[in-house]
Amino acid sequence: MLKLKTLKHALRNLLRNRRRTLSTLCAIVVGAVGILLFGGYNHSIKYSLQTTFVRSTGHLQIQHRDYLLHGTGNPAQYSIRNYQKVMDIIARDPVLQPMLTVSTPVLMLTGIAGHYAVGTSRPALIYGSEAAGKVQLNKWDEYHLGDFLQNRQIYSGAAADSAFIGGGLARLLQLCDLAKNQPCNASPAKENHAADLPSDLLQLSQQARQAHATDSDNYIELLAASGNGAPNIVRVKVEGIQPQPARELDDSFVGIHLHQAQQLLFGQETPGVTAIILQLHSTSQLAAARARLQQLFASELADYPLTVYDFTELQPLYKQVLKMFDNMLNFMLVLILAIALFTVSNTMGMAVMERTVEIGTLRAVGQKRRDIQRLFLSEGSLLGVFGSITGVIVSLVLAYLINHAGLTWQPPGVTVPIRIHISVWGEWAMVSSVVSVLLLITVISSWWPARRAANVSIVEALRHI
Image 1 (cartoon, helix red, strand yellow):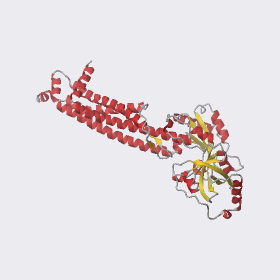
Image 2 (tube, rainbow, N blue to C red):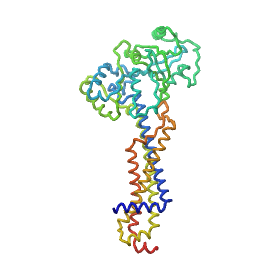
Image 3 (cartoon, rainbow, N blue to C red):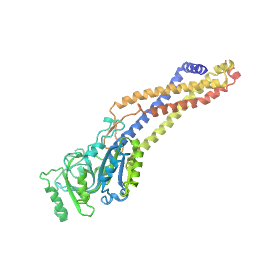
Image 4 (cartoon, rainbow, N blue to C red):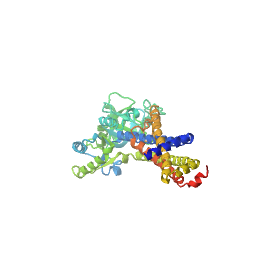
């Protein structure tokens, strides 16, 4: 009963000076809105980046133990040869099976991409994958972003020789029909240097070209050295452009079907892959899936020199971007809390000065020091409660308006614009922590003025009458 009377008295005191109360509430509301909107934006960045990277590289990748150290220079030696058996063991595992959504192999190698019609060539990074697996990877949407993420173009053409290349590579190879957004000037080669090629490479190139009855400017040749050093060549039809996040990668990327990449690297030998991509239902299962894979590597797959990496290790940019935005959020949080602390302290300090006579009167009629202190702490708490709740409501409204404004941004490492989406609704852990912190700050900032009010001498207070 006493606490209820104290709260009523505190509310009446706040309403007595509406202007000062309103200015203090505005400071708390603006602080709450700033923290919640930026925090919601931070969550949105995390979800969109994670979805983008998981769709591209999966949650986990199984590789040869030494592939990251030496494999890019010799992918044939550091490949997984019996990869289908490894995938079958993982697919049948009772622990991993409920977690997995996609298991698909990939093969990465370096080679040379040449456009025979105009005599251009360029070192290329060739990425071979199964089209069906890439399509399945691109469906992952744990955070229900829906159309907030634009789907990437996937080389899922039915033709066995279809390929997608980077926009920069299309420009360098003078595939100007495809490089429409690139400064490209197609012109036939003035000189034919085919005769300058070694006889074995010239013969391979001519055989690959003659294998296709219909010639097209969109056909390119890919050449790579096999594990035993002999060159292999395939001819592919470029179906479209798949932009890459870095200029160097955009100038060299070639995406083809897995069997063609294996033909380039292994020829007639037993084919292998450089990685097996695993995608899970939820990112929260990552630690458990990784631990189970380590157990399999020590038991059923002990004969294979395998290791596993998660997407944050393969994509260090993910953690770097999140850390940058976390630091910005923490700085903003400290700044806003400092402003709220100063504003509430100033408001309560002015209230103590103006109500010295009231404090003396209350003490004279029998109120104890702790009752006076409780009264001023209640006023600060009410300011915190009303300000933070109003801030949450305003944040939800502003987040809704921003989410439906169609704004986009392009984060580092992402090739297509992502719609800006402020995640406030549903992030109840963030909302409750912001409200709790603001309430705590208002209580702390009210403590010193409340203590000073409780220590006011009755005689000195009544002397101001």
